[in-house]
Image 1 (cartoon, rainbow, N blue to C red):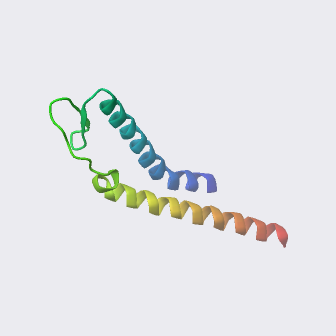
Image 2: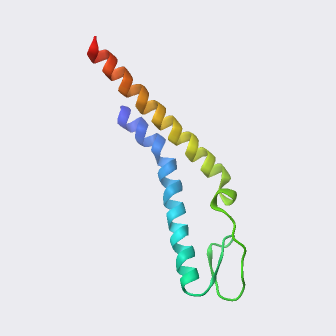
Image 3: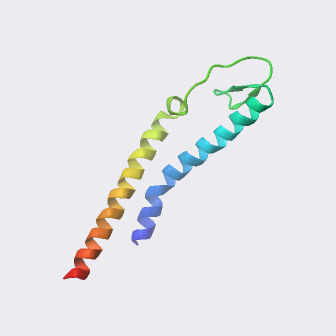
Length: 90
């Protein structure tokens, strides 16, 4: 049961990390090809230059939810670990 809760708490941070890595790779590929990356449209643009918009500015709610979920997973894991040790020690 504890594993299910931990996995559920880690889904959002893993999704956020995957989204960040995928976008990072797309930006890198666009810049390597000589294009500019359009962060609003999410694609390479060979015709115009686009300003850099940080990931955290474009996905603020996801980053906040991801951080809160990661902290909750760490606290839950710590609680389960400490509770398990205390139960075995008695």
